Length: 230
Length: 230
DNA sequence: TAGTATGCAGGTTAAATAAGGTTAACGATC
DNA sequence: GATCGTTAACCTTATTTAACCTGCATACTA
Image (cartoon, rainbow over all chains, first blue to last red; front, side, top):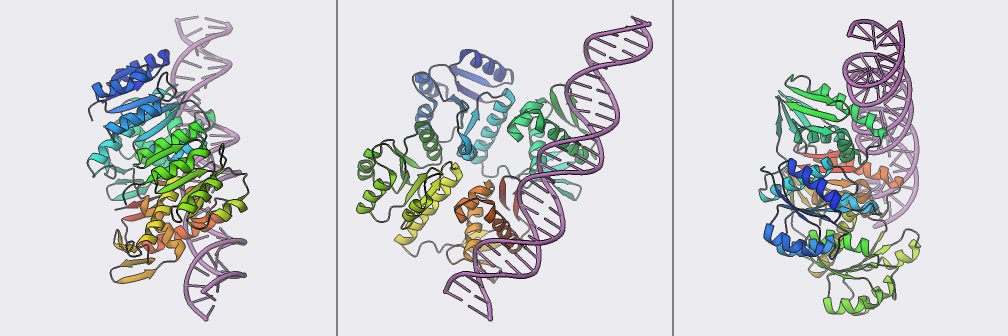
């Protein structure tokens, strides 16, 4: 997938600049807008592939912007940035319908993972034959949907966590993924409690993958991991 | 079924906006009203297909609104949103005759399932004969209305719970459904009592479906299930 | 400056716990 | 007296926690 154009509406200028630079360094094109009132106009002229909207904005809040965008276009994904209000149980069901929510504060990797997810989903909708397809990883065939890992006839059932971790590593292969981002995405927080748990799962995956020496989960000490494939 | 028009009466603005946005992103049309006193008027002009009423509202509570709506129209479904504390007896009294209720905090998934259920029931009343359609699930033909599951000539009668669970799984296939949502929708609460009961039904369905290996009810531990179809 | 301590980050393994699966038995209901 | 739904007892497995180990980086010391 070629890198996407993102409309990013955010009024905290300092944060906005960091996020923008970080996204740009990864090849995305960013249209940054700080004024909620001008966001829709920006949308019309720029026609982005995806929108990232802060909810609390001057002049017009993120929801209202989303509404107007939805009137023009029903399937551009929208990611909302919310302050850590008591969204409690609600948030769970949200990542459907082209929309997603991220709670502030968030990490860049987390945002990027969500963006990639949203784009993949939308593209999946476009050509029906999506998601369910097998992914070749070295000598293995990985089906994240069925949570299976095949290698010359042998099928191994993966647990949910194993499968999600492998998927995350694979989707960000050949690039360093921050430990904290993995923890945030898979476990919802990065306290050092579950930090040990992640190590355990890395060990498990290494065990599963070791029959193909071209695959390696490399430790980047103090930062995270890099999944090297072939 | 084409997507429905929903009257949603809720005074917590932040919650209201999230719910509204999320429902809209799924294709429903939402009329949002924050003032209980104006809800009935909104009902008259908008003629929604279904109403979702918070019970605690300024100026006029949800029950009173429901009563007035019932005087005009006996079969528009009404879903009440209640705080956990509010006596269930009172709520239960109202939950007959096309009404339903959800305890706050709820998840979007649960709300959506309830809405779909309510609409389906009402449509079932309108023309008895529609529902009859069979659903193809892998090698099986499932008729949720007659509660039957056919596979090459063999017919198996399903019990009510079996049938409803299979329907719920199927309608949310290829997506993780939260255990609690299933329990709330099928059993009305998610205390760990009936939690075991759900397991039993999952086992039963797995047994019925196992002749087609392309069908699988995958456990997502700590969260719920995903029904994978071919 | 070589050699040595110290401390952190992570790896590994095993044990503990929690979640769910299975089966059978019990009542209720029709 | 079947059928259905629930409960209970017992089993299995995923996930977390804990204990202990390794290796590297930094700092310290002779």
